[in-house]
Amino acid sequence: MEVALKVSLSIFGNGDHSRESFPRELENFLKFVDSELIHTIWFPERHAPHLSCHHCNPLLNIAFCSALDKKIHLGTGSLIPALHSPSSLFDQVQQISILSSNRLRVSVGAGWDQQEFERYEANFESRYECLHSFTEILRQDSYFRSAENLLTTISSSVSRWEEAGAQGLGVYCGVFGKDFSTLRDLITRYRMQLVNSPNRHDSGWVACMTHFWAESSSSKEGNYPDKIKGYLKRHGSSSSLSQTNQELMVSKSIKRMTEKTGLIGPPDEILNRLNKYKKAGVDELILLFEYTDSLDQETNQLLQLQDILRSI
Image (cartoon, rainbow, N blue to C red; front, side):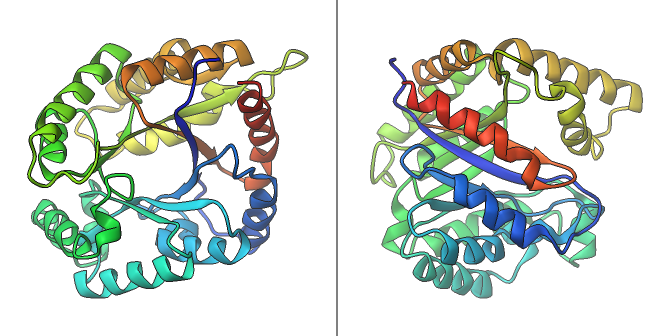
């Protein structure tokens, strides 16, 4: 098959309480990850006060995983500088980079949940200023001058994509509200800015996150729309939309992911969509492994994904 882009995972817990079993679940999950097939495991920074503390700081999960697995790359997707002391955060990133034997990748984001900023006594209005400032601090380290190692998390803002190109940063983007035509246009704009940028050190990097749900030929494991509603509702809850419009947005997102941009369905369809991302100019596809009760529930999906990748 034609596909050659990198495939990674994002592990995201959507529960509203913490469990003592999480370290065991994470350790067991890592045992099944084939580093020849999976490039990076990304961890988010919890960005909603009602969520459990499993993902309050991705660097902590990465430090834990780096001792368990010596091959897989580990990434923050995303780290929110405005919620931290810049100097302290920079020291932590450098320490984790050493502990992981230079397998750390960092995507930084501005953040969007004002309530979480208030909880951390952080200034919501200055979040973009903090983002840009911390990016420059990180680039003092030559390792983070690579667009593959230092990315910025953005959505559909054309100006933010162009800014990332001008800064020579990689892009970490969720495709939940986009189609392939929009994605191709954003990537083209990014690379046009990148090619003439004085900050450019390489050919750039575009990492896109989407949903994954493999259906076996014998049975369907659960129901994808029911599984992902919690994640989508969480991201819509802080918007100014009414509840009715939020539900409509979730419904449209599920339809788009199922029919177009999600890696959802039987193996042949998943391979077909992988090729579409490759042709759109994506360098890395990050598959969301979202769980509510236990990460153990995701193991079978991981094994199916790796079987599909081996068939390429």
